[in-house]
Image (cartoon, rainbow, N blue to C red; front, side, top):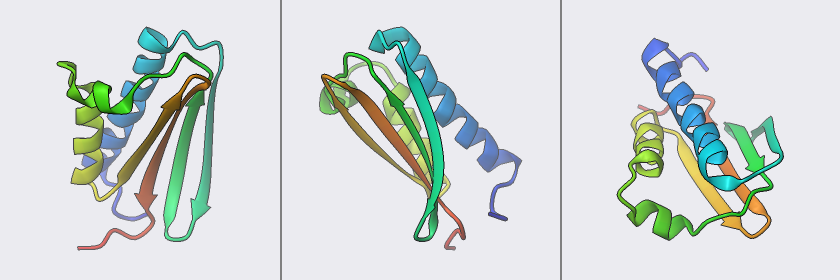
Length: 102
């Protein structure tokens, strides 16, 4: 993943920091799991919690900028974020391309 320079690494760090901050502030979770794997042409970073969940659509509409900033940062480095949330918790998948397309 030669494209990960200091600027891109900072974006990845901030995306993950926001994910953990959201869990601590809002989820009432007792467990956080972090996993990584390679799938097709991507490295996936998967963060799951067993918290109360939330409406992703409503979270994106709220005044808070956290979720929108995560999506903006991911797009700026050619990555993607998938969010799934429900009564049994939340799952965030950050998909980082192994080779970044120009």
